Length: 171
Ligand code: NI
Image (cartoon, rainbow, N blue to C red; front, side, top):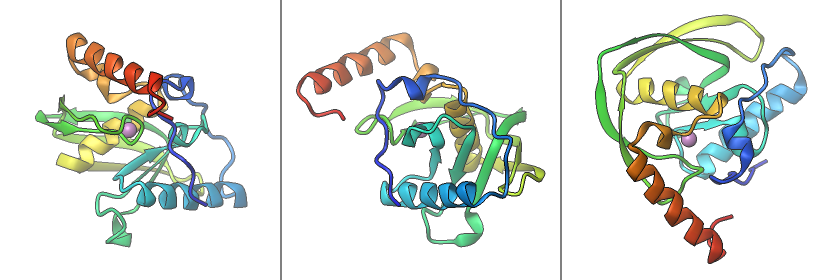
């Protein structure tokens, strides 16, 4: 099932999501399948559960956008345990469509998380994957990437989004 993507302005995106305590359930497997499907439909490389209105600490990532099944990553209850170096590059979010901003992030990032069966693992990613780990983990703590841009740029985005809302072009 393809879920509609929740847009910036909905409180679910800015509230910390709840920890997952039940694993390997048919419901969880179905949700993960739906999250990948919804992410591919939206042509994203990452999707966090709050972005489909579900406030649970679950994210999916696929930097190949569906081209390579080996690149599918499920992060449940993720936490960033190590960051190294720096990268600067454009970042966007499916929940803030039409906007992209330069965001400074660590270049190499290690995440600790659980998989669908509840098994703990650690994974290190560089470049785009490092960025995705940070961006998606942020989502699960109620933080959007625009919290990492200057207050001036953030205000500009907020104003533009408000205009789009008024015009009925943001839902
Ligand atoms: Ni996002």
